[in-house]
Length: 161
Image (cartoon, rainbow, N blue to C red):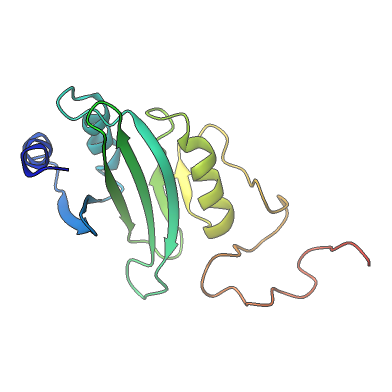
């Protein structure tokens, strides 16, 4: 992304409390759960920005005492052929929550469900927030850093050999 386009994005997001950072030459935005929906609405719908696609969404467990969980959205502009990352830092380590972006990008549905299933991050307002890999009755989140490497014996019924 060139500097001129980045300045346009910064101008359009001015006043929304965003912080910009760089990921190996790709710009990123740090958002809070309170303002991520508004930020992404601007990124998608503003004609001079136009990020029409959300290509990926990942959950992150930093395993720190503060701001343990993050959700990172990878947005792509077909019109301008560039991308940007939107990182949502979740402050509540006990009940990680952030609003869903499924109203903006339908593809986010599965990505957010995966982050919920593996990390336990709840996406408020999600139309179908349920597990996709683990059974519904499974009480744990396997990609959290405090989950034992060998699993929890007896936590899930496995087929006999």
